[in-house]
Amino acid sequence: MENNMQKTNVLFMLPNFDTGGSEKLVVDIVSRLDRSKFSPVVCVFFSGFYENKIRELNIPFYVIHKDKIRSKLATALFINDIIKKHKVDVVNTHHASPLIQGIIPFKLLNRVKWIHTEHTRLDLDPNITPWILMIEKICLRFVDICLGISDGVCDYFANELKVNKDKIKKIYNGVDVSRFIWDASESNMLKEKYRKDINIDAQKVVIGTFANFREQKNHKCLIEAIHKITETGCNNFHLVLPGSGPEKEKIEQQVCDLKLASKVSFLGPRSDIPELMNMIDIYCLPSFFEGLPFSLIEAAVAGKQVIATDVIGNRDVVKAMGRGQLVPSDDSKMLADVLVAAIHTHGEEKPNTDWRPDKQYTMDGMMESYAALFKGEFTNGL
Picture 1 (cartoon, rainbow, N blue to C red):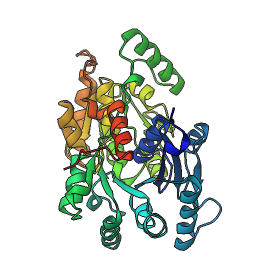
Picture 2 (picture 1 turned 30 degrees about the horizontal axis):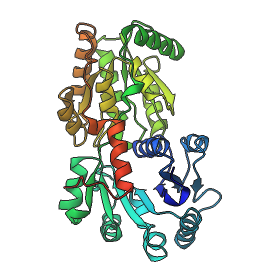
Picture 3 (picture 1 turned 120 degrees about the vertical axis):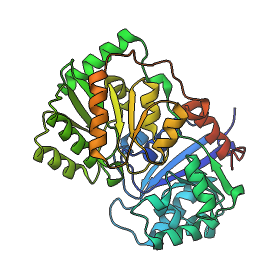
């Protein structure tokens, strides 16, 4: 049996801890790491939905700006204290702010192994200004490994950010296939229960979009498409929207203004996405851009009809799955037409529940790769 001195102590850092894809990824990793080999620690700038989950796992959890907004120097010293206290060997940062504020605590005050993860191309994110991008390029020089979750992100590291290819590694997001139900009887029972809880007629065709309410996800276009569908006289459907985020109030107001309240259910933050995915009939992702969207892979695993915008990330997953329909980005008329056709034809074909992702897209495959990465044994690069 390994003792504590032989464990690899890994610090994960994120800007916030709401129900986004990167936050879910970190929760998946830390909850599944072999605790006889790894001791995870989580630190965020601002907390959110997943804090309780981490505390239930008895994983040390820190919020930098919990009681007050710390200065950059105070933040660096706060992180330094965490590194010293937990004897951190490896740090895994996600997104720009932990990267930019990591140089002092990770490389000047300490010499920890630094892995930085990006979840999408930075040039597609409107929050990344040219100034932030320039700083990020400089900071990446101090990083030991630049980790991308998709081919597109890794190519962006190499071609646009000019990261040495030897530093670039790739691990796809993995789906826990065990949480999806393929037994028809059990699936129908769960579907009936969930629809009853949400107050959805059992005969309705249920469309789902599982994404936080951010501009990137373009819920606005989806609601416009739903309005156009009702104008055609098609009413045998219901849309469910789990999640939270800065655009939620705007989307709720849009639904109200278009008199769609009876057609749309806002479910709030949820941790039971696989169960919700089992409940729906059609999965729709109208994003402006993505990295490697978990939800499209989950929809395919669950045998759902997939409709997504033809943008980076979505396109990659649909190609890898060999299934799903792509529509032009931000085209509510085309999206409405495709959804109407899907609603009308729903039930004519038996759901395809035989598809399974390649191991690299599964939770087991992903965890094997992360364990090897943290131990310095991972070789999957460009």
